[in-house]
Amino acid sequence: MKKTRVRFAPSPTGPLHIGGVRTALYNYLFAKKQQGDFILRIEDTDSQRFVPGAEDYIIEAFAWLGLSFDEGPHVGGKYAPYRQSERKAIYRQYVEQLLKAGKAYIAFDTPAQLEAKRAEVANFQYDASTRDAMTNSLTLSEADVKQRIASGEQYVVRIKIEPDHTIVVNDLIRGQVTVNSSVLDDKVLYKSADELPTYHLANIVDDHLMEITHVIRGEEWLPSAPLHVTLYDYLGWTDTMPQFAHLPLLLKPEGNGKLSKRDGDRLGFPVFPLQWTDPATGEISSGYREKGYLPEAVVNFLSLLGWNPGNDQEILSLQDTITLFSLEKCSKSGAKFDYKKGEWFNHQYIQQLPNEKLAEMFLPIVAQHTGGAPCALPLQQIVALVKDRVTYVKDLWEQASFFYIAPTEYDEKTVQKRWKPESAEQLTELIGVLDGIDDFSAQNTETLVMQWITNKEYHLGNIMNAFRLALVGESKGPHLFDITEIIGKTETIARLERAIAKLKITN
Ligand code: GLU
Image (cartoon, rainbow, N blue to C red; front, side, top):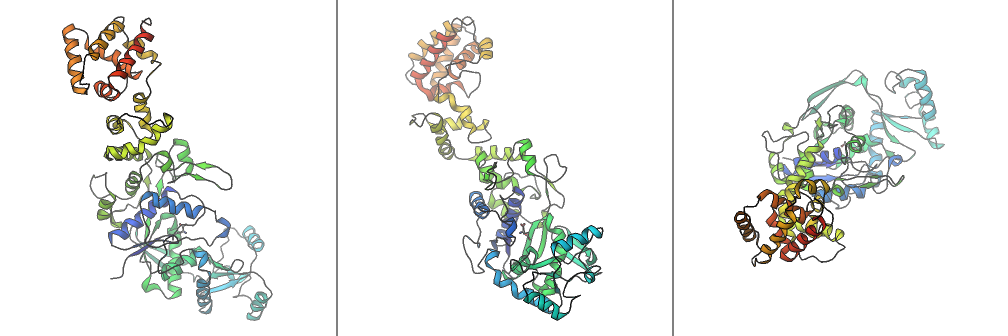
């Protein structure tokens, strides 16, 4: 059996869309399941659309996601180079081969002439029905063609599609797709102006030379597949043609139409893995990394957009996903981009992180807010207490800031509701109780404070609410005695004193 080899073949025309990431992920999963190779190939033959920085962005995005390529421009490999612009010399012989075999022809029609034709003929298509009326090597004499080329006239090479043939594309997800060749046009395969093949030819030649066994890509490429099948045939490579699998589209969260950057802007979620700054306009687009996503959560979320393991399991490690993955279980219909589900995954993955790791990630955020002063508070214990309330690591600050910064203001509504006429007096008494406690552990403090409340027959809720208001400044936060243990006796008493001083006369 041939070794499975798949490629992710982006054109570096800007930041990689999240749909492209999903395509790459499915290639990765498929390859790893078969112990195959996952290759990065940069399809940069269209110099008009080339955007500087896009290739580096793509490489950085996959490094962040933890999906590593076995071959590519950044890692090398035995089929190098992996950037099509560096493979120029390779393509030329296949252009010659097609021309010689009469499977392609040279065309001199200028853009202006083509434009005029389009204006003259409704739905003009360069094909068997129109090519005889155009300026090409099928209508000109051989001498004329030679002379035009010798004099430096620019030309393109077009594929010669024979009309009325049935072209069959076998797709691993969609089954057999048949197309009548008459609907295809004589696509440009090569341009003399930049001496480069177009996407279609370069893509096929490279898939062949790089011994790609499966082409897994987005549904938007399905219309190109009949042309690709024809090219394999024309080049005599049908026997080793890769198998195709066209993945379903990612749809808007509401499900109607294709997911776009505008949907992300409208609803506040990123559609790119990493933040991207447009080199031309300076416009910044948000990324999953910068938004605070864990790469594992993004991978898990994306893996289920168009595939499922056949049961209800949702939290899947990359290894589990590889084991369970199959193209047969990929769906044909579009997958709604449920970004809320993405947030849910991130929340779940944050819960799964060891507290030690989470604390490490939270540390710089704490430092940023506290001016970088070293902090004696037990970070791991703090994140353990508040992590179930957050979607992103950076949200931890909102939940935990009161540990670091004592309240100086008290939420007005809470004060009105929770600070009773007797609160100042009771909390003053509480200070005395706390002062006498030596073991300030949550459990011991709780037991002794409860005893005091019971003995005095005070209202438990009223005391606890006022106590929390004094410590946190509002009515949120984890278990009260976990807070007192962490901030310690001196700080607990200081906060009570401050609240009493400030709120005594309020109600
Ligand atoms: N260069 C194409 C792209 O930008 C590759 C399509 C394919 O995978 O064949 O997606």
